[in-house]
Image 1 (tube, rainbow, N blue to C red):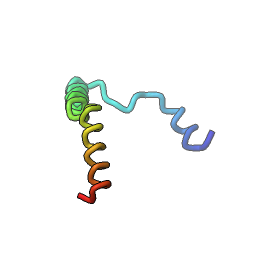
Image 2: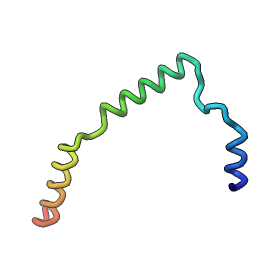
Image 3: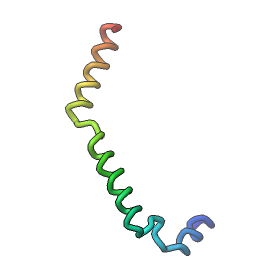
Image 4: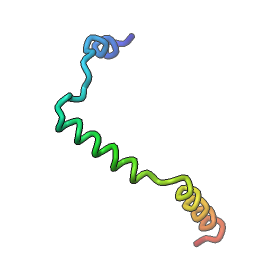
Length: 58
């Protein structure tokens, strides 16, 4: 193990706080991130559009 890894192993406490406000903020960010993630259909559509643009020069 590297020195950094050994040091990390000495600190086993979680980095996140168990404060209810902090947990609520983490949950809110997680929900927002999940909602804004593109769907497979969106990715496929954008990929197809990009490939069409490359082939046609548009």
